[in-house]
Image 1 (cartoon, rainbow, N blue to C red):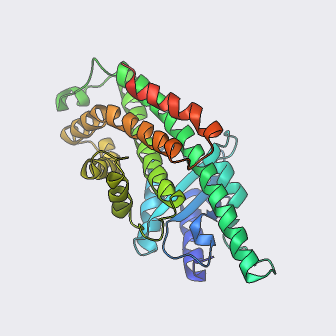
Image 2 (cartoon, rainbow, N blue to C red; image 1 turned 30 degrees about the horizontal axis):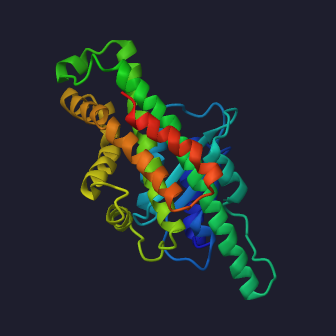
Length: 296
């Protein structure tokens, strides 16, 4: 584990302050491998069934964690007791270590240990990419449905947003949430693809990863992809009372849906063409994502 005892204590404290002492936080991903450098801090926080259900606690916790860890990138996954665990939660539970629990290396020859880690890491990366594609398909289907249901109400003027009826507010809230999930999954897919290409040590930052995939023509426009990532970071402000800002963000999100679906299909087709994951596992989801992107 590459987190210091002070960082572990800080994470535990912030999680407890947000969700109470019953919340359990697990670290998973690259930070568990002492031989690696850099990488995101991947955290699974499992909260009680009666924990707050709105998005604000999660957003505040995410911001507080990144600030406390020196602006390091934090990927935060929150799962509520009683809800069906998705693929990311299952992977995090399987690989993750509850913070505060020591994780000793097995006693084995150094070369054998390294080879085992590399094999497990590659297999896990393939499983993760397939899980991400599954997420992209689900969020993509939801985005397409919301796009159609909101078609007669978007683009919206500020005064219209201020007067949204309850049904429209539910739809726009769902739109923002699915947009955030889809964009986060695209970013995770990009990093995982670069890892499976064996280039994670060369391309470390989000910008480097995006530029690399643009060079491979997986992403048609690196600058535009980064704009979508920044839009995702600004969607929290769509809940603020300013109707001008609400309208601008909602219109931008609604208008970006075709691009988001196209990117998901591009990633899946590339992974299939480059044999980054087994054909029998990726074929169906790649075809489904392509069909979703091209549907009218």
